[in-house]
Image 1 (cartoon, rainbow, N blue to C red):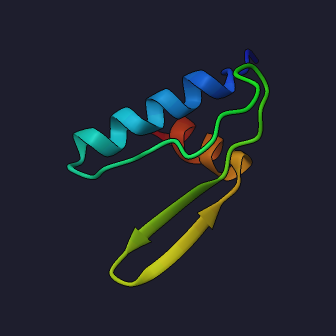
Image 2: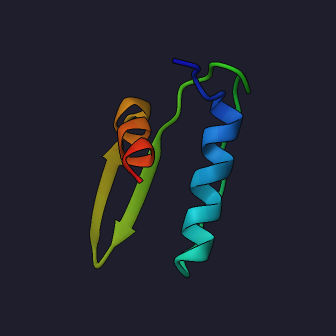
Length: 62
C-alpha cells in the first residue's frame, strides 16, 4: 500500500476542515515526506488530540 506524505495528508485535512466551514492553521512544519503530525481540535470547550495514525484511519474510511 502506498503511503501519503505528511504534506499531502495535512493539505487534505485542511481542505476538509475548510469545506466543513471550520478553520485550520499550521503552527509548525517539519519533514514534508515523513514528519509526525499532531492535530488539536476545539469543539464546544473540549480539546482533542489525535496522532497521525488515527488521522490516517479517519481519512481512509471516507
